[in-house]
Image (tube, rainbow, N blue to C red; front, side, top):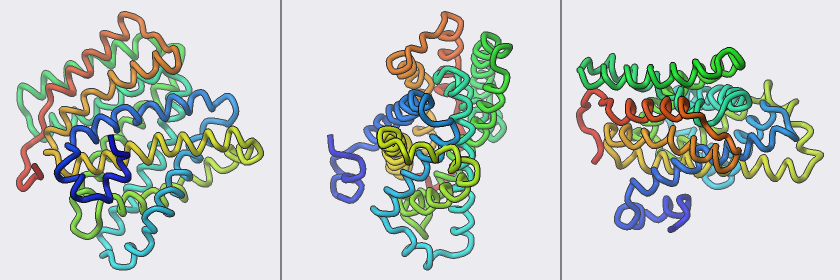
Length: 298
């Protein structure tokens, strides 16, 4: 399969050879494979330092690849603010996500991530289907929370903050992907530069030891590419061509993907109750439906 970044520049390949579902599946794997490697890096570099290395490495790759500052000058004010807002969300979301996975299993954090998304859909489209979806997700997260909350309360605080920000990431990401002012990848590149600046005060000091450790620095760059370049590019490619409802349905794979990667890479074997919790969240994400919008892409 072609590398997703190379495929983006080949419009013919993107339109006729690579289905958007393939981009999503690549994103689904790398979305949590990179963070799993980051957890292994925590032994060498503090958590917020790893988070900043991830953001900064991705921002550097995007800057060299897309040179997004050329696009910034022709954008209107509303689009600039959209990109700044998305960048700020990316910075804080990645930081609290890493603080969460430092304390909780990857699959648990991924499951909690989707409750606000389902809740927003239930508020927008008040149907029995969405009520059932929200109930399934809440019960699933309750099972996950009940197992570990006493031991790691701060982990759940960070996971909840990440969940709220993840909902904003999806909303803003769709707006960027559909914006007539900026192509999705250029918008992502600009927002990642913003994210690197926003995360700088909290992460650069913790990241400093990596600059004296070539192995840690290389690992940090690898985490950035696998966590923020590959999945975010694939997200944009998928969102630009999938209906929002279809994309939301496919997102239900992510908690299960995170659990499997946690088992394989981090040996985070869940209990039977935790597996049930993740299954209920996956079912909730799969069942929920967003309010229909007009002029959605096919």
